[in-house]
Length: 417
Picture 1: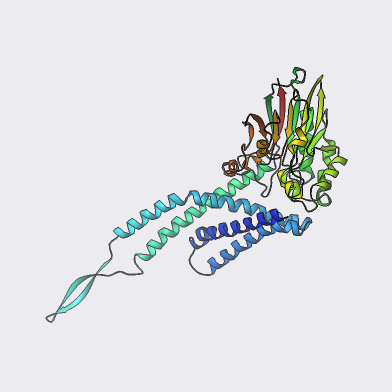
Picture 2: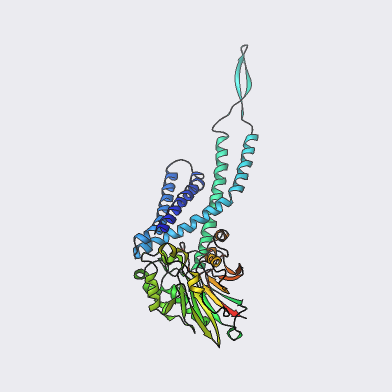
């Protein structure tokens, strides 16, 4: 719970900072002081409030009302994010344009007015340079307003278009990624063994039962030998989401379905155990720092699974020794581990392939550029310290129902000698 509170505190600070930046660029910079600016400012404050409700309200109000309130807040989160990204990207062109305007203003001569002057009884005229506020200031203000409003329009259209595309992608069918993986120790008789891998389904406030049914239907269509659910299945309790998870009992494979916890299972109010019990009822076995032997066509491989790192504070974290020690090292081993970073703990255990999720592939570009700061692989197949790791983008989403540059995925891993 402490981790959740700390995370939310950081998020709230970021929200305030981003909204202040948006206010300066989209409201203060594009309007004149007055009633219009005040109304727009309060509108932005209201949108920020919706976002806070989405992040906190669904936990305080775990009901249909809380879930309904989450929709506008999470959508605004995505729009807010891309508004900020586009505006930041436009800062340099904006600064250059402002510099050009300033140079033009400095070059613009002040108006000269002929003023009558009495000289020896006669009236003459003298040219006097006068700076009039009503003269050069208004055109100057108009040009700057035009520039600010142009930048704001580009950012607005770009953000809304990007989020619209991202929503469509997030709620579309997951992409089937077919991935051949060569394992030296694999018994030739097991060559072609297929594992359907799905992660980060994130059953929660914004998903319905059709989301689960579609994933189950697509996995069953792969006719896999084994199904692996690699963490972050839910964002709520069994009481809230049990009916949405029920289609998982229809998963079909030759050797069954297996599950390991992700970080979000530890964020639920009642902890992961109730979901482990519920999945057992649904016919999905949880691997809790343990392994099972999978025998196929005369060959054998070890399937191991470890708990997520976030279980460590409650003495329920990963234990590689329990999962991997004492086995027959002539057999290959496939490890289910929610976070790719746990590959660094497998050294010395001879893991042939680790299957992970957690990253969502970045979910929303450019987050894919930030993920490598924490995880060794963002998506796809890679090698870390001699261990092959496949990281799926996940089949759901967290937070905004938006995916940009990282479509949802179900992977079909085919083991080959």
